[in-house]
Amino acid sequence: MPTYAYACKDCGHAFDIVQSFSDSTLTSCPECQGTLRKKFNSVGVVFKGSGFYRTDSRDSKGSTVSPAPAATPAPAAAPAASAPAAAAS
Image (cartoon, rainbow, N blue to C red; front, side):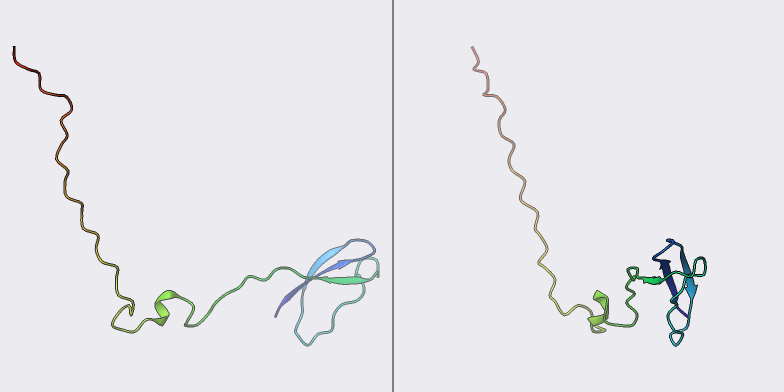
């Protein structure tokens, strides 16, 4: 059963209550008998079942997308001479 949050418009009293879907909405505050309003909170989204993950749409053989070609390493560059050779005297 869901938990609903209520707040009183008159005294500010706030509380949560577990109610069935078929129960009617509360209208009077238990503290001051003032007018209640139902508070709404953001709902977390939960994806259950198949079809939500990357691996769910693949066939049993593997990926249908061909893999990217492997990068070949660049050939090693010849070391550059850091200083000119000294002339023999």
